[in-house]
Length: 454
Image (cartoon, rainbow, N blue to C red; front, side, top):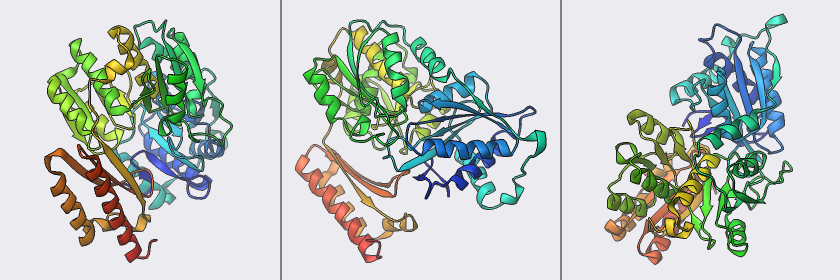
């Protein structure tokens, strides 16, 4: 991870950590780095989610962008993938999304996109970081008539909806779908999209007030949607996160369909239609063991990457694979999008459902999910990485790795978006994985106590 950017942009508590001053500096540096090859007045598109701090950070970003001579084009409240699509479709020079995705309201973030609609590689983010942190004197401010303008793009939501609906060639008429929009970006687009595709739609958590984004709703809190779908006899439910680049689903019985199962369902359908490039899917090290059993059974190759949809995308681009993603619901359909897109993923899943003639619960049987448990342990940024060399931590991980054997696995890693160490254990023995997760997490907490963190 970089000094400002994690696995998914710059992120922190809005205003106090991700300050207005930093947002302005990111706007300036990103405009200079991402538009340095332009021989015209550069345009940078800016989208945002619904959290109360997004307007403030948008103002700071616009000020930074315009102060170095580029125009700032405001898209309003849109999903993150809408920024990626509109940047490349309208030939903008770069894109910015203001969002902290699935995080709670006090957080916010800044995600950057190149003119091609892809998230930036580490090397470009490092160049932006260096300009801000090491050589800020190289940032040349404009004056007089050379400053940029702030422009409003009033049809951004509709243009995105039109595009996503065009990616689906199946009428969803007859389906009753419940949509949980997390009081976030999907609140502005999801209802219109799925009704345009023909579905009957019931809306949950689609009344953002600036403070209720991800508040016991959306893809990180599935309980309300699961209950609603089963009680109201819906055919399926879809849940998005705050910026709608993730999607999780619920079958007609109210059972969860996570990102791993969603990928399995869609990949299996693509393979049966002879559309799955090289019979390969790209997933991450967090993907459930059950997915790999499914893939082996169906003759599908599963390539793994580090956690983060940017790394999934890099692997997909390298060899031309068309589907990949994460258990969290970040799923990339590369023929249609350059980043994870929750509403596209949900629409693709509904398309498979209609074409199959089955119930959603029947589709979900394609993959058995192994029991999996995760515990998050807080750690100060200054103590990242160091915990890995602690002998007591290593000993307890080694102990349970041996006990689990081939029927399970342990993954302990630092979050790329939050100050946490994630301890994940999975296998066939539920009692053992619970014990292993708790013991490893406790040993990491002991480490933090030893060094005075807790």
